[in-house]
Length: 375
Image (tube, rainbow, N blue to C red; front, top):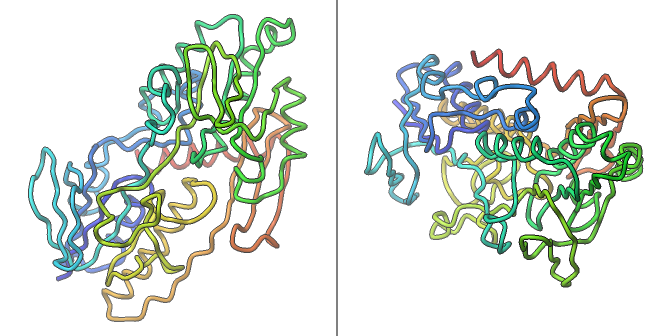
C-alpha cells in the first residue's frame, strides 16, 4: 500500500486527489492536508463582489467532497517538510504531528506578500477571498463620486480579475462616469504584455477599456499606499478615493531548507511536474515556479499531469506525461468586448485571440459547470 500525501486543497490538490482516487486501487491511502475546509472557486469572486452570486454559490465543503471519493481530509497546515525522512510536520485542529508518505504532492498555493507594499493592509481592498470580495462590494455600493483605481502590484500574478473588475465597475458607474462624477483607472506595474506572460493583446484590450471610459496606466510599480495616494517606486503619485488591488505573491518559506525553491520561494519543477531534486514528489498550482500569470486552468492541467505521472510511478512505470505552459482564458467584459486568449508561454507561436459576447457566455457556462460538479 502506498501512502500519498497532498499538501493543499485548492484546484491543484483537489484535482490530483480526484484523479488518483478514481484510478488507483483503494488499498492505497490518499490524504489531503489543507488549512480550511472551505473550497473557494476564485474565478467567481468578481461576481460575488457585484452581487451576481452568493458566497454559497462559489464555495463548498472540501472534507465532504473528498470523503465522497474515498480521500481522507485533515484540517491543518504544513509547517516543516523533511523529504529525506519522507515526512511532513503538520499543525492544525485535526492533527499536530508528523505524517509519513511514499509519494508527495505540494499544492499549497501562493502566499500574499502584502508587507512589500506598506499601507496595503490598511487602505486597499482586494478580491482574494469571499470576505474580501463582499467587503469591496459594499464599498463600491456606498461609493458615488471620485476616483477609482483598480490594479496589480509588482509581483502580483492575476491580471484577469483586475480587468474584469474594471469592466464591472464601468458598468456599475456608467452614468456617473459619463457625467464626470466618477473617474476609473487601471494600473499595471509594467506593460499589459508583461502582465499576460508575453501575450500581445494590448490593442484589443486597450480599445475595450477606451470604449468603457477606463483610463490605463502602465509602468507604475506600486511601492506604498497612503490614505489618499498610490506611490510608485519612482515616487510618482496617483490620487484615489476607492482602491482595489491584487497584492504581490510569494511562495512558502518553509520549503527553503529543502533547496527546492527559487528566490521567491516558489517550487522548482520539470515539465512532468516533478520537484527538482526530490524523488516521488510533485508540485502543482500557484506554488510552482513557472513564469507568467497564475490561473486556475493552469493548476488544473498541472494536477492532471502530476496525477498521471504519480499513477505511473505507483504502478512501477516511468512517468512520461508532460505539461505545456499556456494561457487559455477569457476576460469577461460583460458584452462584445469580452476576449478569449490562447497563448503559449513556452512557445509564442501558439497565439489565438477572439472577441465577442459569446466568450463571456462560454466562461459563465464553464463556471456554472464547475460549481455543479461539486454539488
